[in-house]
Length: 185
Image 1 (cartoon, rainbow, N blue to C red):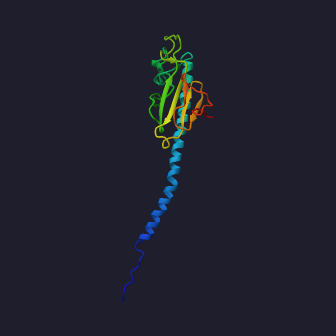
Image 2 (image 1 turned 120 degrees about the vertical axis):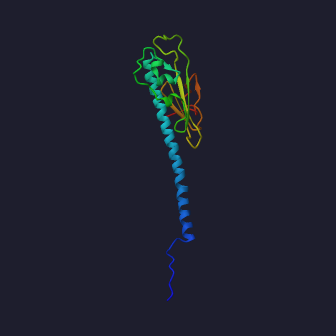
Image 3 (image 1 turned 60 degrees about the vertical axis):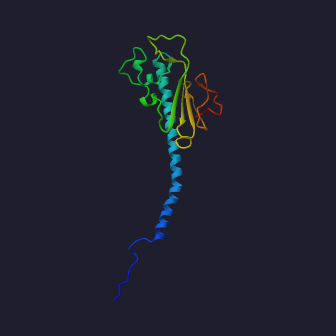
């Protein structure tokens, strides 16, 4: 009697190639969508950070006698900047925003405006300013983010589609109709 050999012991080369091709097609469709989702998430987080900084500066403005601060570290540790500010009082921003380190795929930068003419340093911070601008630009354009963002002491947020810094004049954003500063609604 002869024994019959069955071919159900494994996959053929053609079957394996078909499976690999299908996986490749699915990956080619999914990866660009995942990258777009990551860029969108980075941009959303950055806009949230801009809004946080604008709110923090507005609150600090009230605590500092009507002046903003040019040192973001003062917003993280106001007791060392505003005289007689209680040491157990809350901070205005976290240390990561204050340090201007890259976050969510965006590089951060900050510029304080001009110092007020005469300030009472026994009441106000010695680093008080009349205005400020905060920028966020993609660390790697097109990969970590597409748009550049900015916010200033007026409370406005704007973006540009080139990923560059928005233009400023005297540490406030330029005309909001300027193509480098489209108002973010």
